[in-house]
Length: 90
Ligand SMILES: [Zn+2]
Image 1 (cartoon, protein in one colour):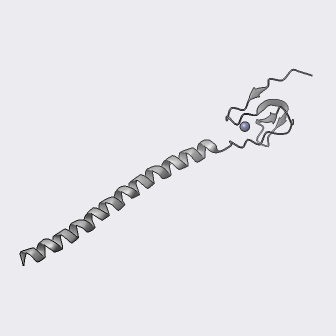
Image 2: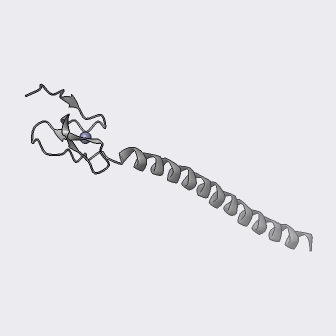
């Protein structure tokens, strides 16, 4: 049996994995095998990068919305002030 190259999962989940050339996914890509269980590695970090990007995008949207909400408050306050000054003028 050929020695296998055991390496830590590159997604940072902390599991040790190796690639078995005889085990390939449906699209013929080598699939990572868990070095401990020898089962295909189902990475819990799979998709985490994508999620991080989505979270970052949401944070930016949230910041935009906060800015909008703050500017609305300012507008409302200005309207109140305008009404008061109108009363003072009359
Ligand atoms: Zn992993």
